[in-house]
Length: 148
Image (cartoon, rainbow, N blue to C red):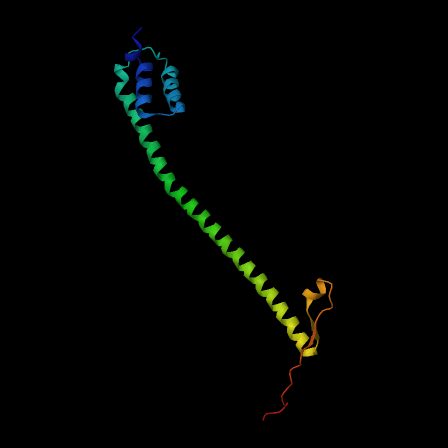
């Protein structure tokens, strides 16, 4: 039996530490050796190049995957921001539409009252319990029906 640092297990641990390899990959490397009937206590020298290459490739693939994921996550966050901005604008438009609808109803009611020659009451006096002040609204005088 060889000392752990020169063993396959020792090299796997060292390379895993250097490359920050995920535990699933480390376990796959161990299983590969064991499935071939090679003890992890065996001297790593004959397998040194293969071990280094395996961990180097795993690291390169992991980095490449991370680089590929960044743009898609950037796009997703930009789309979320655009969606949120769109939602805010729609809400602002709805609020403005409600305000315009309310003002339009108020103006139409006022015009109908003017057209009928209605008496306008001061609602604030009525709410206070006093007799409301009444004013007569003079109706608009229509002009001649034909061209002048």
